Image (cartoon, rainbow, N blue to C red; front, side, top):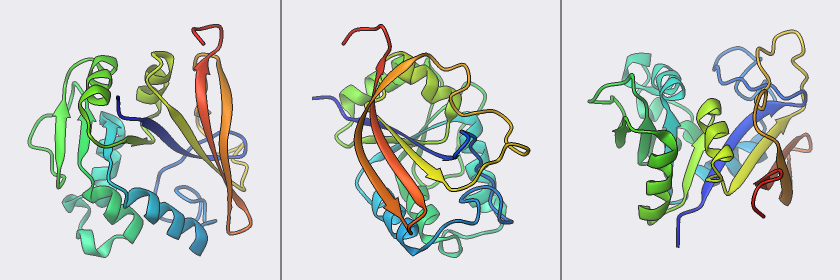
Length: 198
């Protein structure tokens, strides 16, 4: 049986994503509370493998890697736990060694790489961010769950590109909903390419 693959994304109500730490606009948009942080920590503490594209990995390395000046014990527990997970980075532009505790670089085709990982991995796969990578994996039918955490903000002036802009068309089956801190909504869907095989 193949490993499940979850595309995990944070976004605003109007569909924009942001991953930058600092300030109160981006990352959690200043809306994180104890339930959200506890829920996220439980999710990234599970036995799993992270899958990241090159651009997202570069950003995560800049924010949470040794060059950021922060040691793993000094970053928040959610990001420290995510950083400690075994991670596959899919990039044709990065080179080894990767300055990350347990990272493997894959330079091949992303669809072929993830199809192989799903066949070989003894643990579930999760990808946070990596938007263009995950849009292509969704189109190839490799994403089993889309986990969208919708923060109670609209970023109409500051949002750069909607997360699903120019993505293929998908039907979504709602698997679960969770309200966190009375304001943030986590939605988990099973995607099916619209007009594709059932």
